[in-house]
Length: 97
Image (cartoon, rainbow, N blue to C red; front, side, top):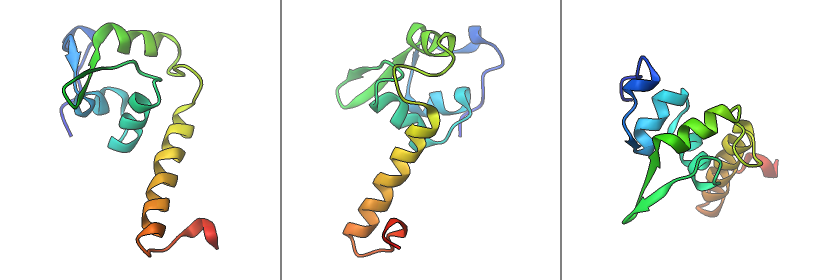
């Protein structure tokens, strides 16, 4: 995990999802889900998502709620997708029990 910035001024103008994780104090799955769901607006450069500092600021000023999905919903979605993948591969599916 990357070092957490000490102030908003220390945050670069363009962030990767990996750089976003310590700023928000969330894991990889939640960070990617926030970007994928559009709660945090991103720009794609090639196949890679980039978050502009003003878009992160807008997300934080909105109370971290983004558009319409909460952080817990983003985490749950990422978890459920992982469970579905395991089930499709013949792994345990806790939801089926």
